[in-house]
Length: 355
Ligand SMILES: *Cc1c(COP(=O)(O)O)cnc(C)c1O
Image 1: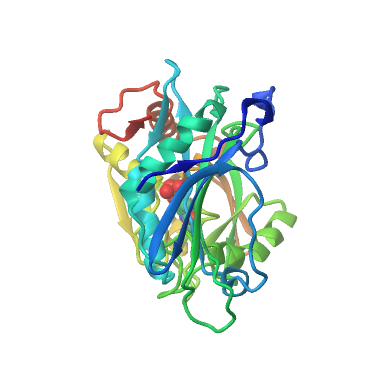
Image 2: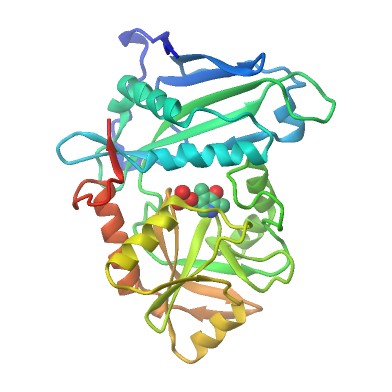
């Protein structure tokens, strides 16, 4: 499919943020966006246009029944100035898994990756070079048909927007405090936990806000049936280091299969660390803590890459992990992954995709 372009003239383009060190997460957008429509049973009209508000019917089905999915990936500036994506094909493949679960028509993942690269040819210069910063990429699909009867929409808009972002934690790579949530649930068996759906995030807002009021950075979600097995931390996959082994929750269908998770497991195993993917009972974690076997805990996801966990609060008790510091395994995995993403370490696995 030919991608048509309607670009802003240079004098109408925004001035890039001057102080890259002050970039936040998700407030600044570039000049252009990619769009594609679905109607009459096919995706059509791929185009790059100025970033601008959407026109939507108040009866657009996404507004009523939340039929929408998204992805999140980043473009990094390497020391030689080249722009690089990290395992982007995996994001577009996962986009299709999300689409299937939400009764949204499948897309051509290879074409979307090409379309993203076209968009980056136009706006890639927005990729910051300040340490820890990147250009965050948000592909999204929304149900646009004007119709209130409950069924899958027959019309959709797919768009990709770009957002220069600073380091996820501006105060630096530092341990976070997490609250183990034992009444609210994020995801139930047969539900949306394994895909990136806006609805899953809506579910998590109230509990996360309540934890924030108690001064916790994130929640640790337990399984919805027994509130016993560890699932995820906020919107990150979760890991514990017990007896020098990395233990992470297995993908039971209620957990998001993170691309960072898959990368962490690969890098850890190739560097000789043992990794177990299995059910993790929260009582096992508390037991391991009490007998000194639990030495580190961390989360992983595209936004923060790796987040060390310095404190767990469970049933009114607080447990300080790794003396509230960054443990050696957490640091090593962080250095390795960030090194590959930013082009400071060799990419021996074909994960880096240059523009
Ligand atoms: C996106 C996401 C993750 C992390 O996935 P990555 O591919 O590593 O960014 C983890 N959990 C949830 C709920 C997510 O939405």
